[in-house]
Length: 266
Length: 238
Image (cartoon, rainbow over all chains, first blue to last red; front, side):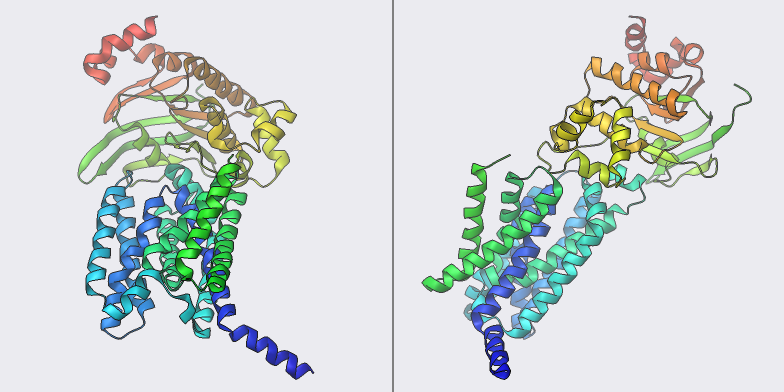
């Protein structure tokens, strides 16, 4: 009896839908949570389009026959180093440069990504998730959330006032770099769910929705994570039921949450 | 005055950014209980002087703080977005977890009604407060850990005239109650006359240093502000 029970559980755990939901929800949680700080840093545009930068990296990885995750992460890492330098050099927002540079890398990426892989890279395909992906996602999301737990106080004070943070001995540029690195990591693992085009939306939209109905930081960040997770859960189930592509549905689900929160705006 | 304890001595202080001299040859000292005002035109290096005093920028020369001195700092740049989701309570708890202590400090910055504090201040988004209220919250933040010295960078920037007066009266009250030493940057010479017992005029170099009534003469104001001197003089004669 007991043996049978275990084997049923194992079937559930390795079933494609369970894996999709697990990976999707974890990424939704992580992306939503980080997104709340991206919004506070007034980096919504960066958050929204940062995923575009991953495409040339994916293309080069495919051409070199290495795991596309590493190509994507490398490209995203270079992008965040660029943003970090811009942040350090000027106090102004770097929106224009980001807009131009990220769009160009998308164009370049589309050009050099081999045709058969292009669609998957652009829109993601969570149905191809394997148990090992779930394991990597779980480990990375845990690292991201743990690191955020350690740095969110310093990060928030740095966002409010760089000078105030520095006077308290906070290394503002180190904290900012660490945070952007976490964003790059979440976006890189999230590409499987929503693809290059839409992963940024999963960072920004749930957090924007949470902001509509929050006064304080704790509620804002927790709701952002929750909305990210719910978007993934709802989107994947809906797509699975109606046999649709999950990536766009997940993002649309977060859009529906955003519209609902507008009704209860604070 | 002479038997007071000197808590800060600055000797031949200079700051350079990329070979560009921002400050040079500053010499002054601060005694316990002083209110020292730093005045000067925009871009004169006043905020840089603060950053040097806090050890946030590299400098040449000497800055001696008395040992074990706790310094509180209220920065000028505090660009809270109106819609930043951060409540006053969350902000203050970044520094002090004890709510009773927070309420106590809010009372000493002039937000006295406990019901008002709990229901309308602590749970409020910090960006929804008025400029004057944000300033009080910042002052509360800076005195939460009982500092000996307070550094204020333009404490009343962005506050209407009536509010300015209130903030300075508050600083004066806190100084009397808690025995702080205050170093503040101000653009308003009226305030300097009224509240400071010492003033340094800075425009890259030290243009004047001493008691406001003796050192803020037309000649040093002309040197400090150039062509604008007559305007400034006129303003404080009103």
